[in-house]
Image (cartoon, rainbow, N blue to C red; front, side):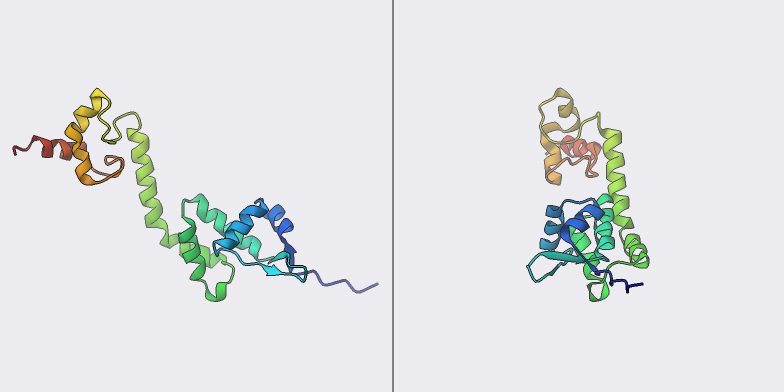
Length: 164
């Protein structure tokens, strides 16, 4: 029986794209952002280590839970020698992300619960907004949808009620 050829430890970008479910352009983007590294063959074509499948899965899972590419890049940079994350790495990193995820969950819950009410945008285009944000008092707390960011309409209205 002839000797079996050793399997190439690297795969071309098309194979990684197919196996990961991502477009090759997304893999090139991840590489450009420093999340993924490729090797070049003699013809200059990108090839990836088979372990990069787990790295791509890590990136996608982190994105799914709402992490930015910068946060993911920082997490990957914390690994020794730029290695692919192990299950233990994922457990350690995911625990450090819990406070951030809890904040996002709280913000989404608040958004869901207040979706049909005033969002504190300060537009004053509706009569109802004048009740929750008289004279655009929420603007003193900063930009954005202040009530969704945690400011209270009652505080804005109390401030507006103070005599000058």
